[in-house]
Amino acid sequence: MHKDVWQRCLDEARERLIVALDAPTLEEVYRLVEVLGPEVRWFKVGMSAFYAGHRSLLQTIKRSGARIFLDLKLHDIPSTVARTVDIILDLGVSWLTLHALGGGKMLLSARERVEKQSVGERGERLKLFAVTVLTTHDARSWQAIGMSWRLEESTEHLARFAIDAGMDGLICAPTEVRDLASLFGRYPNGPYLVTPGVRLEPDQGSPFSSAEVIPSSLEEKRFLLQDANHSSSGRSFFERSLRGTRDDQVRIATPEKAFQDGAYAVVVGRPIISAQDPLDAYRVWVKRTARALFEYDKTCSDPTKIRTRIR
Image (cartoon, rainbow, N blue to C red; front, side, top):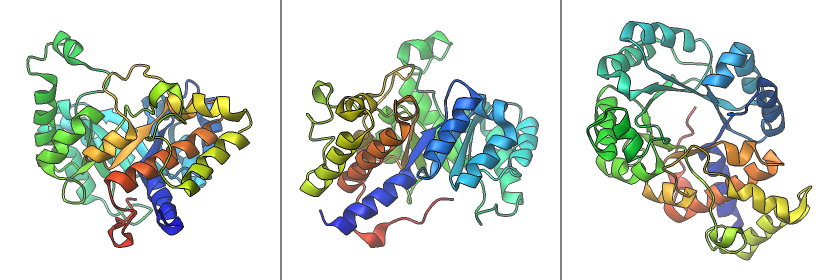
């Protein structure tokens, strides 16, 4: 692979890799922003971090230069959601999630408020994403809360009326990306498909034992090996930081699988923020994402196909 192509892949990977600030305390969230902010392009702020940090946290993130994916999964009556969107429009975030289970009218109320608002700080309007079925659910837990349809059928149904309601994209499990990409098309011909639940799981528990982890060229191998050898804690830390944990995610996949199936971006939390050195872990994820994009998305091998940056 030519060096210029690899650099384009790395740059595109930073646009497609979203770091979830799902830390246990607000103090830790601020520390992560300080450590990762100079390199991370996107941070996801969930409910706990937002309720604890409010506007102050968002301002800190924006000062770092990163964009904000506000993951609140709004789910209430349409008028309440509409008023909430009005408030969020003044916060300067780039993406916002709503729960598709709130129904078509609720999603439409949010869409209408966004369309009436002028463009944001970066010259583009707020993008709305519908959450279909949480990645913590499997078939058994889905039925346990009274859902009679199969989980896959429910996801497709929720996705259809979310797109009909004007959502810009869908948040879905990596195991569902392929079906949704087939149904709606891949971006830019279809909606943004963004998936959490992505993990690095190389064979035999080592990043150096799987062709998935190490790019094929000698130059790229050298990049990764240098990261391992120069880490503050050495190669043993590098291996630990790659593995991640399943935690409460039950429908997961590797980044290669997610991008192969049609994902636009991936959201990664614990494998990065819980690592001994989060910045080292983030850099490893960038390189793994870059490799996946080169293999399966083809946005890096042809510079004319590099998509317009989402703001």
